[in-house]
Length: 260
Length: 254
Image 1 (cartoon, each protein chain N blue to C red):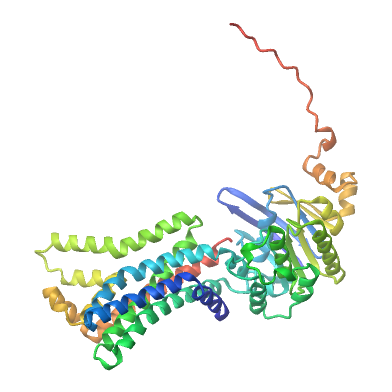
Image 2 (cartoon, rainbow over the protein chains, first blue to last red):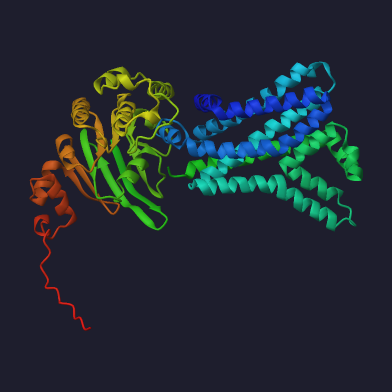
């Protein structure tokens, strides 16, 4: 499996797209930091970009990579390699290289700005952790969609739809429910709804870390109370992990049974 | 030894392999023949473990292929379509496969044999169909495995390369390997194969030596022998001309 990770990883690292992705983050972080001169402001802006863009890029890249490397996959399938090793290896290769673009692209400008001498280092770490987690989550979801759909157009369609659902539609429905049931106590409900969607969970984790939860009103206080405790942080990390492990498990199952 | 028992595979409603059983114990070349869509490639892909059969077992050298994937270490496969990752050079692809298999390889002998030296530094997507097939051949023959499965090995090759390919296959045969070949070019099959397995509608219709096939069908020529397996009642030669029917003149009333 290590060899497959290596080949998938270098295949992507050499490609133009991961350079473009890396340069985009490099430029964005540099502009935000050196024009704004405000670490915490830059982190909030980057969080907003991250929670929309990272899932989108990971989904599209994951689906695209799977369809484009079909020949490579077929070549591997005739070798004495386990199917689960082939697909897990490809998955780790692509998610790894995307995460590397993200971490280096954002990390270099922040390090140059003097992140390590400031108190913001933990806030930045949370930004990175959620970014990497979202990359791994959405790449594994993308691999599932691509494996289950032979038709590329359908696969791409479902992938974009999934991203749209989790990144936009989910929040829309969430807000609608909050607005229409505002007479009722909704703290428990909103807490659960947030924890269940990895994008919302990432957003809340960063917001709470940045101490601007006061903006969220009473709900913010409930959130703070929950996520501030060790149970809360363990539960949210567990949730992110579950979002990676479950799709990965299903991907391996699907791969075992598929005809190539 | 390849042993296939009661293999069933359906894609949707289409029953591609229908309770197929086949034993291949004899060394040398066994040609798997059959019309388009008779299940040849599905059969081959089942042996390779790329297609998962609905029912039935396949054992290679006494080991069930479902149990583990290591049987593929002693198996070489030439896919029907020479599709490779586009952004790699020929050299890199060969190196990668060697790295994945971790076995001694005779790639240099093969590159010289098929005259592929000038293409080693070219990217795979710039190669012509025939050259890609040569790369395909090199990847398949590289590891000197006792069992070889070749799906349409002659496709896209020029006459010189085709002669080379036959030479190479004959050399492998002399080493006592089991080689499974599919092809639609009967003259090629006639030259290299000793045994024929004939597939139709996912079943084996005939399995035996080339001379057995000739005596069974009474046809000297392989093409006609196969055709008469397909159409047992009348020899193909007489079927070419349908009886002339008189055409009724159109009745035109203006």
